[in-house]
Image (cartoon, rainbow, N blue to C red; front, side, top):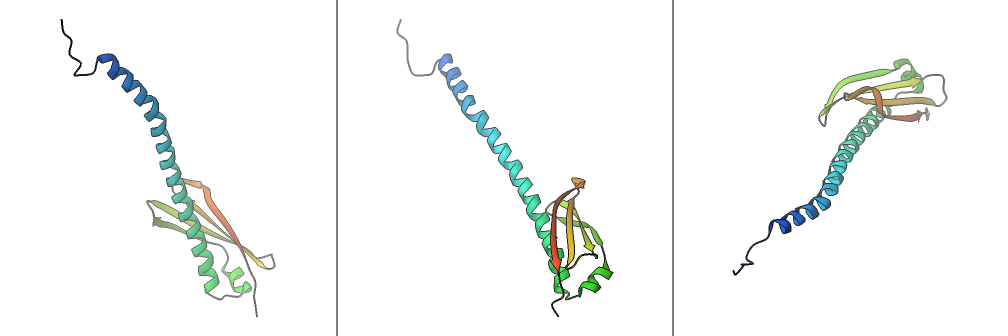
Amino acid sequence: MIRSKNGFTYIEIMITLIIMSIVFVPLMRMISVNIEQVGHNTMFITAANLARAEIESLKSRNLTEKQIALEGDRSSAGIKLNGSIWRVERHVSADTDPLKVEVTVYADTEPDKPVITLTTLIEDLW
């Protein structure tokens, strides 16, 4: 009986599949972790930009320390950006010199946990 060697045997195919699964399963896990990190970083960068925008908006109005302190705390909710709804809160500590302003940003995914808090000091220059 003459045997042809044109194809692969069942054992050869099974060994190949086992080797491929040993290689691809960790690779797929690594890819999924990277996708999660990209989402987290995008969320953090968006929150940082919203906080910076709030601080720059306050500074660009050229208000004195007293005017800012009288204006007090502020909260803006419902900012839709990058697939999330954001809430930005500004807290002014009127009893500090220079004036301390904290901006905290929250995402709709975890409304009670701040994504980022930025603090700046504002002082009258004239």
